[in-house]
Image (cartoon, rainbow, N blue to C red; front, side, top):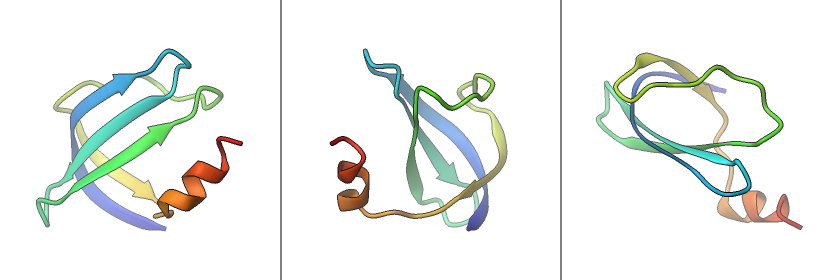
Length: 68
């Protein structure tokens, strides 16, 4: 797992209720895209919110495998 201090800079919800978030790592200035699945329980995030983000990097192939 990786932990960074990040700022939420964009979000979008699709018709199936998947939420895509874009965060900016405040140290490296790189951007990170995360997807919240519909069955995950989490409070709503607000644009501009800053906090620690813990994540595990996965490949695009890994993500596509969950769609089938």
